[in-house]
Image (cartoon, rainbow, N blue to C red; front, top):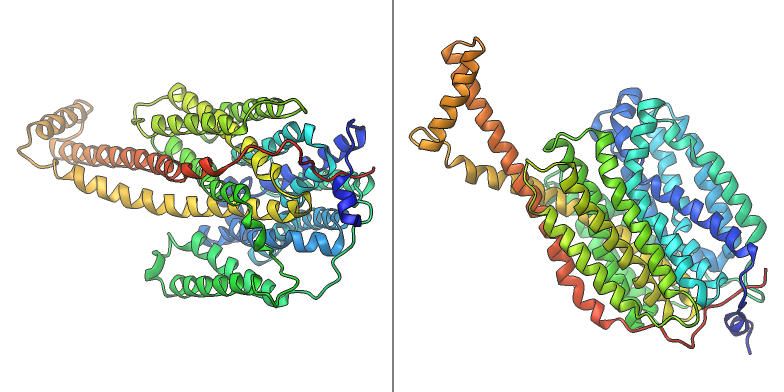
Length: 533
């Protein structure tokens, strides 16, 4: 038996404290990484003022982080095989922590964007490598609960990020959005380096480096992410740069796929052969849709709540909080149901339940009016959160339950890339969709705004009379009444456009739902690789 096979077959039936210490270190670093993708969003206006940048320029603080993170994510399996998982994870956490310090001490836009790019590159391993490591450290009967705890942080962190960022910015300065990472990063790096070890007998990949694949991958994903981030505000393909980068992205990614699958490439940086596994391929497809719904919802709701419902940033965060708690509850329940050697729960049943709850929540949000209150949105967001917890944990369970543990790292990197790209597509598509539909609904509504329409005349007369009662002259009151009508039309058009956007998320879930039917129940006999600690 080879050393790899021996490592794959070795399992430990009884949990020990070391495993849970490793879990704490991994989930702490993962939450830190995911939080940093959203925590700075509410601090961008303050950053722009302090750094002397426009709002469009300072947006690169968020864009640079996501761009480098997306580029490095699919390469994490290569780096893990090259340097070992302990060394790679520890180094990534250190890079992330050092970059956080320099982000907080930056005095110019160029400086902070540079360190955010470094931070995003270091953060890639904190998701994919960490998740794959848990698959190899814990025995199968504990995987359901362990993965539920890990995924809980990944799902809840984007929801809580804006709330935490707003609180830090209101009470301190934007610099502390980065400084809070320093003690957390030091603790996580210490725990991982001290307690995590590579599997016994594991050999490092000392073969040739796929520089061509790395180059094509970096250029293709970087261009794609830039197009998704900047396309909406630059009018998409009407902008020459966006058009050129779209062509470059499509060509380089196609060439990368051909080269990675070519027989002459003996050390591909991304092993796409793992997609031959039907369950993994279906799960990756579903995770694109989940990323679309997760990040798309986090993007839409604050805009909807603050622009139409009059919520403050704090109230917006509090409205999102029950959904995050619901996600935590359902994820933990799924973990308990799917854990243990005698678990008889079919994960696919939980997936269909989560799908149903999420679609119902999107349908409810898609029918809210400008008269909606906090109670209306809180219940819909709670149901949405419960549905997400019932989706992420079981889909992970199925995806990893039917693959060889030796390809878990590659599978994890592709799953996290799918979720991240799904979120980028979601924000880009929903932003454009929302803007276009506001214009369309405004055009449709304004057709009824003309003298002679009884409803219009009555409303203008009532508004003008109210203004004259407060001492305004008749001509000023008339203009004021018309301005109020315009404002009402704009609010109603915006409300209808938000409804359309929530229903677009619903439609995307319905269209991708057939992939659930391709998932199979995890094999009972297969067991993940374990370590001796």
